[in-house]
Structure formats: structure tokens, C-alpha cells
Image 1: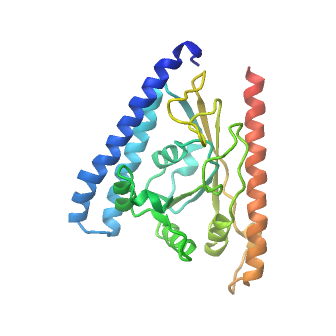
Image 2: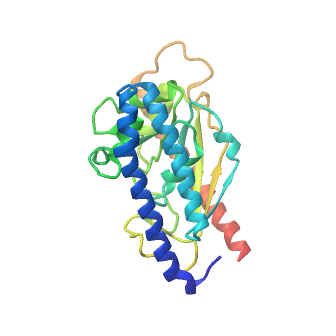
Image 3: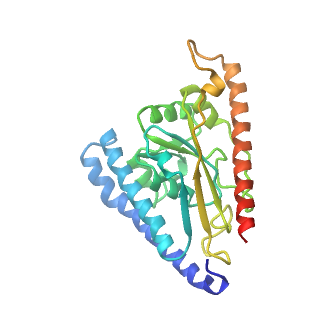
Length: 273
């Protein structure tokens, strides 16, 4: 990997890549989305077209960053993502985590902040793709369940935002993901994201490039079935109190799983140095 002498180049290359990213968002807003609307405003077919464009665009963007030498990356067990109707759960060490995942998943959906609907660069993709908007309303869990049942691949970061720590450790996880999985009966597909050098983390501007080129590893783990928590049969709705207890347990188990895998990845990286 590149050392400190190439840092000024990587700063410039990062700025270039994010300029391309901004142009991609504007093109969806000004070209793709209006054309898609003419084919049927808010329809499922329109959303699928826009999501396919975003999937290809984000895949191209990650390849551009690698080609320019800004990052390197690898995906382990990529084949586990080649399905529909997945509920993907990932840790969130970097701003580009969602870019990686949208580029890997066909028909991706995301839970996004309401502010992204009014952002100039993100309004087109968010609205056109029909992403689930977290506006603080009570229907968020139902919207997420409906998305997965419709065959979307829903991406959720249970930390809610990028990790505050830059050493790979997790921020507290929210129970919303667990409620979606338990109420919907969906298996979880965990993706553990590690990076050799902290980049684009919480509070890190794009121009603060690390000394060495960051290497991202996305490890897709085996599914976690909800039968592990709910049992093999559900003849009646679970009582709310039990679901709350199960959600707390599932959230703890997920945190333990991600922490264990992040530590293991760090140990493996350290043994190579």
C-alpha cells in the first residue's frame, strides 16, 4: 500500500472522486428521475429502474476510488448477497459503507435520514429509488418490513450513524433492526466492515487523508435465522413484552458478534505486519 509520500495525491484524488459522486447525484436529480417519473411517478417499476442505476453507479464509484488509488478493497463471501429479500445489517466505520453495499446488492433499499430528501445531491436518488425515510414516525418498522417482503435488499446500520470511535469499535446499537427482523420473521445477513486506516469516519473531512491507503474488507457472514429466537413455529403473534425482550437479546448478540469479528480482523491484520 502507498505510504506518506503519496498522501497529497490521494487528497486530490479523493476530491476528484467526490466531485464525480456529486455529479452522479445531480444527474439522477435532473435527468434520470424526471424521465423515470414520466414512466410512472412513484411506481414500483420506477423505483426498480432508479435502484438499478444507483446499484451500477455505486459499483462504478467504488471501482473508480480503487482505480485512482484512494482505497483498496475486497469482499469475502460475496455470493451470499446474490439474493433478493435480504435484511442486511452492517457496522458503519466510514461514510462510503453504504456506497459499497448499494454497489454489491441488486435492488437495494436503505433507511435514510429525512434531511437527505432536501439535500441537493441526494434528493433525486432518495426520492426516485423510494428509499425508506426515517422521519421519526411510528410507521418506520412497518415500512421496512414491507420493503423486504416486496423483495428489496434492505440495508440497515444499527448504530444509526457512523461509529464515533476511529479504532473500529462500535457505537451503541439501536433496537429498531431487531424489531424489524423479529416482527417480520426475517433472517439477518451480517456484513462486517473493517478498514486498515481510519477514513471518512465520524468527524473526519474528506481532505484529511490517512498516511497510508486504506484497505476495506467486507466480510459477509452466514445468515442469522429468527427461529433461533422465535422458535420454529409461530401460530400466533408474539406478546409485545416478549418481543421487546427478544429485541434486546438480539441487539446484544449482534453487538457481540460484530465486536468479535472486528477484533478477529484486527488480530489477523496485526499478524501480517
